[in-house]
Length: 105
Image 1 (cartoon, rainbow, N blue to C red):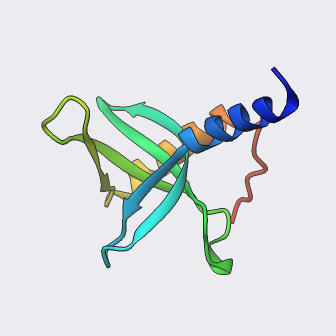
Image 2 (image 1 turned 90 degrees about the vertical axis):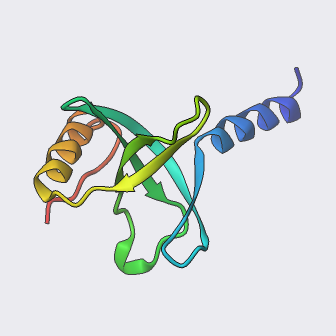
């Protein structure tokens, strides 16, 4: 395997981490998948917007995973409960405390 083949493999691995979702305006938004967290019988994904605006830089998005009825499909639903969001974010911070520099506001 030469260096170019290795670069291609690394690029493919990076692309596997990308999730494309539609926002409230129907526009596609790309996210980097960071983690899947089980909490109280539900699964939640932690995503990082790839193209974020300056004021939102570094903020993650947490969505609840919902079964879309087919085996290969799932949908993501926003989480309205701030307490649940905070608990999931705390779990995420603990798991990745050595990988990310978290800023407490």
